[in-house]
Structure formats: C-alpha cells, structure tokens
Image (cartoon, rainbow, N blue to C red; front, side):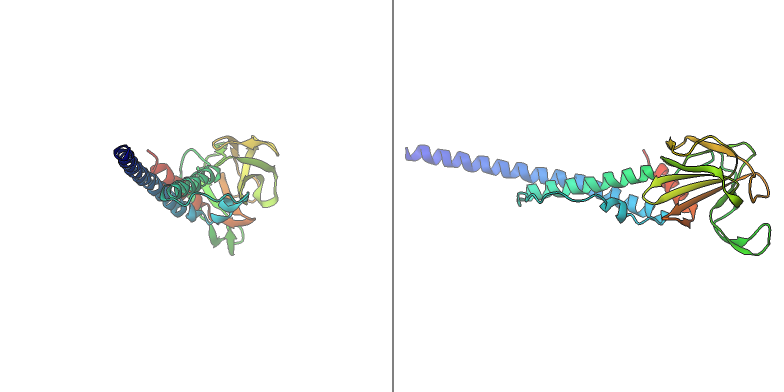
Amino acid sequence: ERRSARDVDLRLAALAGRLDGLAAAQVIGLDRITERAAGEIWRLRRVLGRTGLDLQRPLESGLGGPLVPIDPSPFAAAVAGTVRTLGDAQALRRLAARLPLDRPLRRDRGLASSFGPRLDPFTRGLALHTGLDLKAEMGEPAFATAPGRIVSAEPAGGYGNMVEIDHGHGVVTRFAHLARFDVRPGQWLRAGDLVGRVGSTGRSTGAHLHYETRIDGEPVDPQGFLEAGRELAEGEP
C-alpha cells in the first residue's frame, strides 16, 4: 500500500509538472498574440492621431458592468491581458472604419487651395479657409469618405449647394459648391456612396469641390484624415 501511494504521488507530481509546462507554453502563446495586437494599437493610434480626434473619448464611451473578480494565476492574468488588448485593437479598427479617411474624388488633380489662412479670392484680404478646394471638373462625382447620415443637402449661402454628413464621434464632413445633390437629409450612406456632382454654386470662382472635416463643430485640416487613410491603406496586406 505504501508503494502504491508513493506511485500515485509520483504520477500526480509528474502530471502537475506537465500541466505547469502546458500553462507556461500557453502563457507564451498568449503573450505573442498580445504583442502583435499591441503593435497594431500603437500603429493605429499613431496614424489616427493625425486627424486631431481625441482617440480616448470614443474608446471609453459606454463602459460599465458588475465587478467579477478573476483567478489571479499567471495563466488567467495572461488571458485577461490578451482579451483586453485584442478588445482595444478591435475598437480602434472599428473607429478607423467610421472616420472619413477615403478621398472624396476618384481622380486626384491636386489642390486649388489648402486649409488655413489665405488671401480671399474675392476681397484679396486675409481669411481663414476652413477646408480643401480640390481641383475637379464640372459634374464630376463626389463620394462619401466614410459611413454616415446626411444632416443636410441644401443651398447654404457662400457654400452654395452643400451636403453635410455626420459620421459620429463628433466628426462631420461637408461637400460644397455642388452642381447637384444625389442624397437627401436623413439618408444613411456607406463609404464610397455618391453624394453629388461637382459644381461652382455659391461663393466660387469656378468648378471645384470644397471639402471640410469638422470635429465638435470646429473645422480641422482634412489632410490629416486623408493622410491617415493613405497610410492605413498602404499598410494593408
């Protein structure tokens, strides 16, 4: 009986050793997954940071729930860390998919005017230009740069015929001086859907697309969004 009990103890010890080795291997595997996800998070934060958007706000919204303590073992801690990191990476990917990172025109003919202070084309005095004037031909199609809801599609003073799209997270895009609307207020669009046709309505000297991005009502340089979109596209496999 004594030998039998000793044999059982030895077998249990061997099994415990194998289980410890298995757990250690699993922890190493989880660490590798976490490391890859952390690298993606770093890249997305760096690229999306160019837009001027506070990245913490959309990621922290809607948090809550009961406190459920977890097993403090190394394996359980590794699982929790991996789940948390993968969740953060997924949240950033979802955010990127909602931001206006695409180009509003299919063909890039360059800029007629950039964002920021400039000489007004009518008064020749210094004025703030709140968007980009993209060179385009009369009637050329303009496309939504991210999913969103049409807030307005109507004449808007100096903007001429203007479409405003709400993309969530306080981000709005505007398409101005259009010759024609191809959307209606309240309509939901996907990225790449037709918004309207380039024109020269309103305060305009010729056919072009005035394109704006706004965060919480304040104009920001659309180039930050466009550059972020270009870099993310280049990094895709």
